[in-house]
Length: 282
Length: 142
Image (cartoon, rainbow over the protein chains, first blue to last red):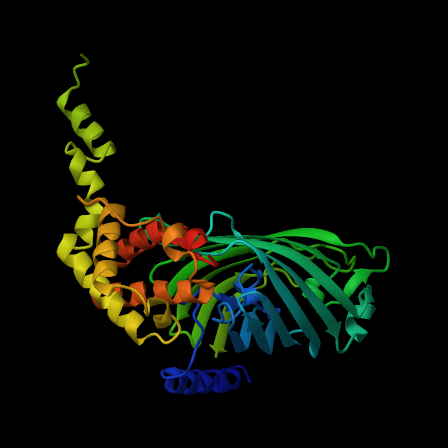
């Protein structure tokens, strides 16, 4: 089952790389659309950045398709989605998440609609960091388990503000990207365990950080931290972190691989494993 | 006069980037291949501009020989070479052209493509791009 999961992924990748060499792309500099997070917003792997997905610069539009896989000790997350952006200004995305409970049995599914608006600054060019506002509307598809463990709602909206900046020639001649995001959320385990709890329906403010060094225009390595709320009484939720390497093969295809530490999930401790993300852009 | 011991003086020289002051200021210029390298770079970028349907129209009334000379001068001065840029300010020279962010992105892409093709190391590319990027606000939407 696990090995079968890779087959469409690798097949898709080889097809994409094969057909993309002559495909069209927007004007933005390679890598500046970032990768796509597990929630469908452009960013790193687990943190949404201020960057807008795809390579559309002013007056241009861009379409992105993406699939992510996370495999930790007792769980697997698969995402599939599509994004659209216009003018390096606005981004919308639709993402389906399936969270397989390998040890507990069954799965949890949610759908996420994301919107992001670039309000100020230019990632590469201005003193001021690029700043974007975003929202992720999340709807759980099979709410019985989250409800049983104390979640209040089967849907919720995350609101965030993100600031990203690339410093050119910053670390031993390489370019450095730093990102800070503040998110207001009611989601338990990003919403996979529902929203709010029996006793608390208030928003929590969370800090999320990313750093990446662009080794070349095509390669980046980085790390991320995502602060998590801890609302449900039945089991502790812990902060997430990852390290990743990203390969922007060309403006049409990128691949990210990483190592994630998701802490305890649903009472099962030390959930660590791999992260993979494939993105295709036109 | 303070008298440094030899190892201290050596360490001090390392810290301050060596004894010869001209070496530190012209290093990017030298890394880019001095005037010959800059001429090659600018010629490469001009070829890319000529092929770029999105931005080539901005140059339809431009005296390309003069533009080439001024761009080489400007890059020479920016990279610490022995030149004086004699052209107008970036804001003056782009007023009326309504350069879009996409136009600017395209020019950056051309620089990266040509520098890569001419085997200029990534660190040198980044050092030059770091000097060009701040011009964005003076160039865009004028």
